[in-house]
Amino acid sequence: MHRLLGKTGRLALIVALFAATGGHWAVLQSVAWSAMLVRYSHESGIAIAVEKTFDGQHPCALCDKISKARSDGKKQPSELFQSKLEFCQEPVSDLLCPPDRFSWMFSSDLFSQRLVNQPPNPPPRI
Image 1 (cartoon, rainbow, N blue to C red):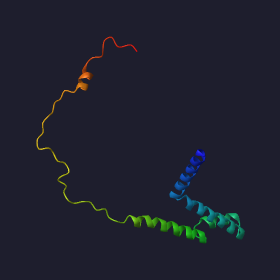
Image 2: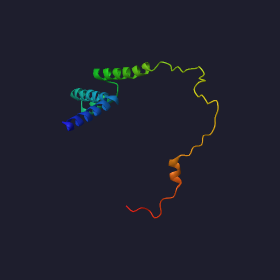
Image 3: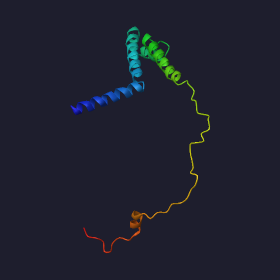
């Protein structure tokens, strides 16, 4: 059961990354090009079909929809981030408050005194 969840999680991550990077558009465009190759090869030879498919002058309906959807998708995120960033222009005087009086405080720390002492001679055997 645990391995199944791990594999499902990895698959979900791969699908999410694929969609986030626009891989679905590449798959759809490949399907459109394949359909165009088949249709144009029935009308004429394979060489002319390849030329018509990839010259950009003979797009199919699916290619038009894909290019329109891709251009619409690129416009939407830029519209979302059109708002200006507003920063606080007021001076902040209470950010750091130094003390009224400053003096060094010396204390004898027993732990630091122990660190200064030399190790026992001879060293203990374990």
